Amino acid sequence: MLFFNYGKYQIIVYVISGLVFFLYVYLYQRKTAWLRAFGQKALINRFSKIPKIHRNLLKGAGISAACCMLGLTVLQPKWQTTRDQYEKEGLEIIFVLDVSISMLAEDIKPNRLQRAKMEIANLVQGLDGDRVGLVVFAARAFSLLPYPTNDYERVFLRILNMINENYVRFVPYGTNIGNALILAMDSFSKEYAKKVIILLTDGEEQIITRSQAAEAVKLLMERKDIAIYVVGIGNPQVLSTIPKRNKEGVVTGYELTDDGEIIYTKPNPKFLKEISDMVGGAYQHDATGDELKHIFEQVVEKNKHIIGIKKKSTIIDVSPYFLGMALVLLFLYFIL
Image (cartoon, rainbow, N blue to C red; front, side, top):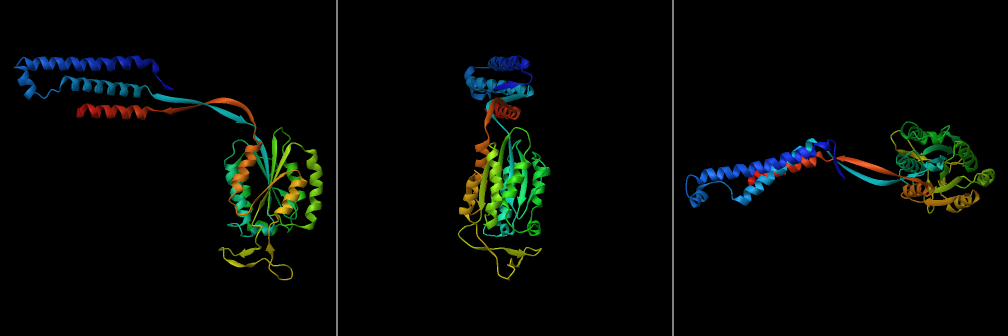
């Protein structure tokens, strides 16, 4: 819908534009009559540069329309569009990120951990008003935020960027999923909001992991308001080494066992599916890292419910278009 900031003056612009047209026609008639007074009509038409009447009418209409466009430009024209905007309830999302040393394997580039961080950051930057938290785990779990936050840039992403190779090598080796899930449950606020846990791990199976998850299962059965998603990362078809790199990023060796043998890591989707079933969650696996973005977006969309509809208006300044049209009309006036 078109409107003007000073719409009450539109009638003045239209009147002046009309007067310009009639004035032009009047002056044309006066000039024609004046020239005819000097000789025959045929002679006048042969040597006079006065355009034919239909061209003069077009020129008059052009200069009138150009004045109209310039006048309307001064009135600050705007274009308003209105559309329905669905309001969706805000979520509380706790990311539970595996930081065990196997996450440094490079079957996914640049490695499992960095790719997971990149896709988490991409998702968070696209959120609007949802609150996010972060729990990391290896042999022990740590909550890196005291409560979920919607300050993505200054808080969440800064803390996420702190998790690097040095951090991974500092934490105790292991995969304590149960402890991580319990800590994630405790990280939610007491406010009413849809709560989601996204557990991202390469799924290196350890015997103690199953027993660690038992307590979490018991607690999760009591918390019906929490949706859990287990996301596996890494290629389950190949054994991958865990490289060591120096400050320049050059590989200087590989992680070794206590016996001096190279450690190989291989995700176990079957085991992760068992863990997902134990805690009543949904499971998806990404062997290349390319599907993480889609998986995360699916989780968010599935848990966001529409709570209302409101009208959203967008107003665009269209003054440049009116000014451009005025210039085009003036150009046509001079070439006719």
